[in-house]
Length: 440
Image (tube, rainbow, N blue to C red; front, side, top):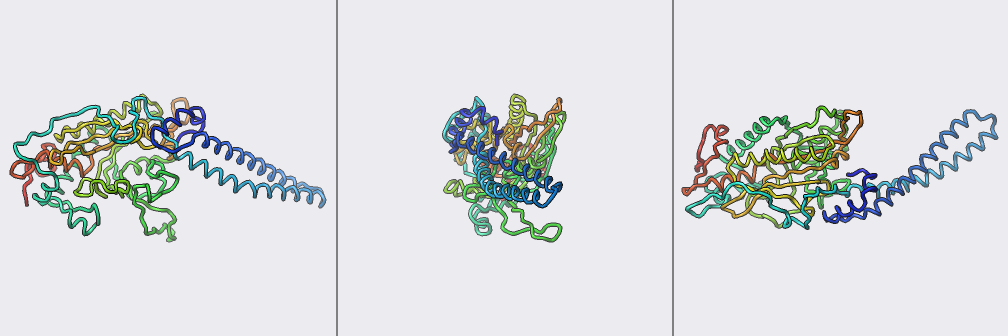
């Protein structure tokens, strides 16, 4: 969400950003809605002022005749309010519906494009492993080594369900512990945040496309059952499962006024993640590449409203993710996201993709995004600068390490001719020194 004053002063740039991001937004109509709701609000405020003045006048009325005149005026004011207030609510709703669609103007170095095909590769690291045999894909390796069971996962959990087993569990948990310790060493404070959250956290971070949850387009799971409040009453709050720790971590600072000297705040969260994947119907229907639940270590930074500094912090976060891939010995590339593949709030974004030699494909293993103040305005996260001015903070996030795709990349890149898989050296301390995975 942007400041309407900024939109008014940069109408053409905002309209261009919406067009480049594939957002159907009429900025001129948005501004007309703003004028309409502002005008109605001004009229309502004037009428309420008159109402208060009439109430005061009634107290000092000298006789019944004067009170009768005041009463008639009061009725007229009430009738006007009764007519205007529904109009105002309708105009405000229309204005807000427009405002949630308004995109952040992307950075000048963001590629212009229609979809993911127009993303731009900016670097690669590591050569693909050379095999003197035909490498297996992760599905075959997982089956042969008894690490993954997709059939029983689908029977128990439905489509995209899976079981991790045996050394598959140990390897994934080693990855998570390694990433947690890496982030702590980098100066990020650890959190295990809630994964069951109220809607404001998801709206505020941009995981609702509109003002409220829409199951047709939002890749979020809503919890059907209701909670009880501390009073014993049934809660009216709708609850959702997060797809990443980002919403919970950002919402931790909602409605707070931070101090500039405490910025940037660097935190990370370990959490289960849940994604409905409704927008991926028909994609990756076999195997474990695209699933409904997994684990992830996520980086989040809250910083002051300075574009240059936020860009440097984003580079820092990407560098950590790159270092993790290099520590794991996974060939990877960094891709800069184009406008058409970028969500409304993002200013600048990158993906990291690991190479899967058995599957012969790149696998997205992380995404780094700078939202500037777009999320902070929704969540009301501010700070006081050195001059005493309150400003909205800039918010950034990046994947440190998810549990699934790097796990698949390790299986494929570290496989041996006999079907075993070498454990990356940095993970061995978390697996009691185990160096090779063989069938149980």
